[in-house]
Length: 75
Image 1: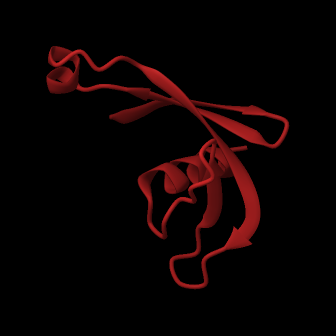
Image 2: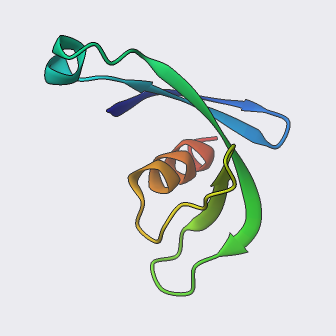
């Protein structure tokens, strides 16, 4: 799954995941997940920590966390 779109609603980030060709072949659909910024940072690696709807946090170097950070820094 690749990230195609990131939007912000107050303090929640809506991340849209688009399946690649092989995943589409097996019937996986486009999905949107919500991530909330926790306000904490990793000491090594320097990314923010985000929590998803299930309460799981993004790991250090997670492609989702890095994509949200890059999107935030564009402005």
